Image (cartoon, rainbow, N blue to C red; front, side, top):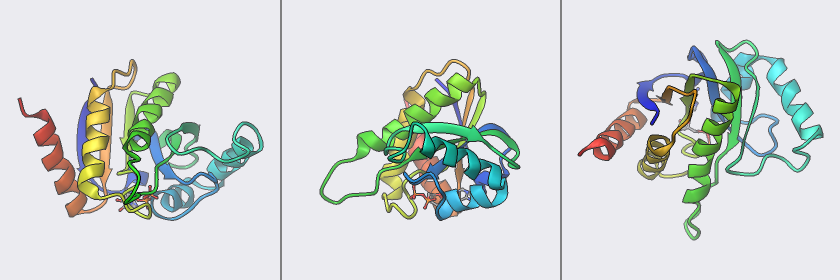
Length: 175
Ligand code: ADP
């Protein structure tokens, strides 16, 4: 099991091996975490994303999958782009959200990353209710058995998100 840490802050400021991006399937940038990563990381990240689009991801990166690029000027070595599912009132897309965390950890392991920073995937523009997203995110990372990743750091943007993740982690860790 990975050691999980929670912090309140900005994911672009994390000195970790890999930062996970809540990307959209175009891989060509967007708002929220995605916008912040490309703004701070500089054009090198977008250049690698364009190469991925021209090669194996011509149709875009499907939701639930993950792929790595350089982290450009961020204080990290890699950005792992993953596409969360958009929240749906009528369809259960929980498996896709869990897959984002599993696949990001798998890619991080392939890279040999020891520390990985995650945002609360799908809880922004994609409207996933925070408490449910926290339960899926934390239980998936708790259940994973990566080889090289020793720390999964959730970087929560604001007190509300931090509190929800902290309460959920306590509940999941209770004997
Ligand atoms: P999605 O499209 O997957 O919903 P968003 O980037 O819109 O992704 O939002 C995901 C979560 O990340 C939201 O809870 C949002 O408040 C938070 N967030 C936005 N900017 C940052 C940032 N710079 N660092 C960490 N979290 C952020």
